[in-house]
Length: 325
Image (cartoon, rainbow, N blue to C red; front, top):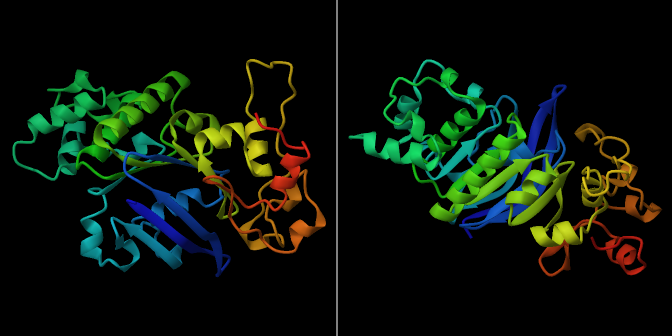
């Protein structure tokens, strides 16, 4: 297994006190595999992604416990020099807003060159990278600046910079959110092509279940700082095993059933400083019972590789309350 996250806990500073925002996350990603990490804004998914290379600013928070094993090395025990040899080299990131990530005073050529491990005669390698991310038009244009490119081309350039060092793991945090639908599709196709070509491990962080359904092999659903469901994409789509996942899927508009009412999840996600007792989804769950408040459910296997934190899921499926898709 390339990446193993074990019982990861992260605290953030809030109102002069520490609040736990990642509350014991376990996640594995292997080479050639894309895992989608899904959740509402503020659920802790981006924080979990940043922690993989200890990118959480010390003034904001800290990793309080857990393990992050990358190629069997514990990231949390590496010194700064050892971390520098992994960040941007073995593990690369692509973020949501490409224009804010690119340096406006340097050309695309210069920024990709800076990402290369081999600095001598980089021209051929840069041309290969530009071609691999669909930017053939700017090959040879060493004076092309970020502001001269469209949003989609900027994101392609960011992906080019991310793969320049031939990483093993690519962390993509909402990489298509700022793009229009057609460009989103192109970027997703590009990511899949690079994954297959380079045997990349990918962590794809998003709030958009539809996008993740198109790209992920496995899906982890995150809520209130914990993964509440995990499994192969096919099982999550056809047989979701947590009321929150069911609510997310039901809230996706359907072109096939245009007269079907829009089903939103009631309420809103709790603040980390005001988490309810027991199941954290209890206040919003339409299947809740008093027993759900007794203690927070463990993540347990419910169906061959699919795990859930719902104590009622087998009962609800067996009595027909929840049906397969």
